[in-house]
Length: 340
Image 1 (cartoon, one colour):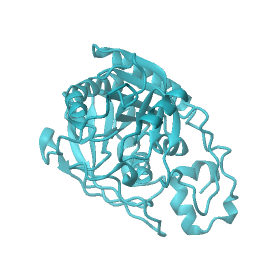
Image 2: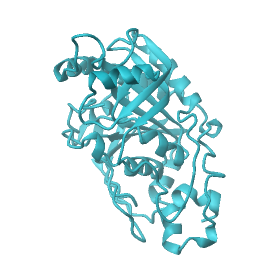
Image 3: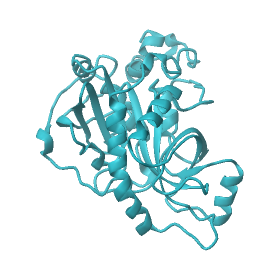
Image 4: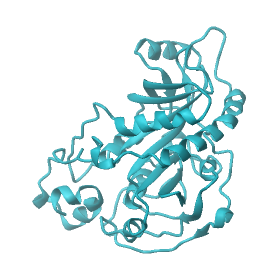
């Protein structure tokens, strides 16, 4: 989440502890490092590299390093990406699953070294966009705020409540002024497809729920947990925001696969226990892999998503007021709207 400089270069070589238990292997599934260079913007070489493939879509997955170890994933390579907003959480894993390109970002970094407050959210989303992602799915461990949402279930939220503070939650905090609508921050088409794909696992699937995102890294007090329930929140996590907001600014269809691991602390005589969370996550990793595998074959047309033209009328700054270096910086996100 660092500030930006004039020209950047892309070097392609390729809630808490979610599927970070596995460490990225260096050479599984034929994986290798790839080195490329390109001028940042719409014409980044890696974007054309993805586009030149026969793949219809590219699914970006933000979660843990273990997610990409799924049957059928081939041609895995590690991509090291530098963005105008600093480095992503770690190397990005790119592979193919059927006719879909898969891009995996280990949100907390290998070894789970980044706390929710220190995740480079902007760099993660920008990197996925620059690599040609057409959809983004966030896989997150959450706490349940409802009796009927049982640990081990699957939740596909449609709404967010933002209780974070101090995180960089926009790409446009300097040089360019933009106001994007986040009334409905989740792409309904992608969320529906994700919920349908979740039927491949034998667990209850909950739709149209609300995710409250807290700053962390601590868990809630009982008073806070009851307050969030009174607000209508159904699950609680620490990483869903600002990912959803940034994906909308990047005009990427976004949805969350939330995996409940506990009941937070609103129930009498209960509190969050890390050991219990990890036990549930052991099962949830396999479920997430199966769901993503099914989703990759049924991705909706991104051009029909509300995200597709989210920035069309959101930018207030006149293009003529943008210096050359700012034009370069925002070409990837705004080039087709502002003629950059």
